[in-house]
Length: 216
Image (cartoon, rainbow, N blue to C red; front, side, top):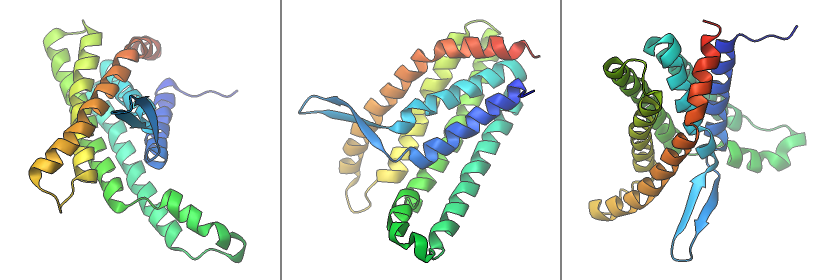
């Protein structure tokens, strides 16, 4: 009979989100177009809030150290993925696949800068989310799960967005003021969009905790 333990299932979904966000995240799509203002987002916007949701569910049921272990597994996955991608695109293709080699390299050969920015932001934000959620839980106990979830997510995702945008798009050939205004124009709307996704997914935290506790 096909059976997966609940915690194993959560870890699988988490790793799935990490891999897909890393591989497919560079694609963006239009959310709002007012002519004078356009808002686009990475397809990873659907997955990043889910990863934070899983963090909070695990912290609530099993504690922060278990959640940190899952985050470390995610970081290891990204690191191994990056190493293997670099190996794969460096190998010469066989004659059969020579025609598609350039497309293959384009799809998988993201710049090292973008990958480093993604990895750094992911690490800082996920560990910060677990830390803040745990600290609020110590103060409030088991009440107000919605507050703990969203407060930790809002702060952690601000760090995630700020770190990623800065490392990925800060132009060394431009002045500090020019860079600052440009980055703020990217960070604020994208962060608010992530916060909105976090609020929408709040019921999933309650459902996830209730579901996971049944096996505890």
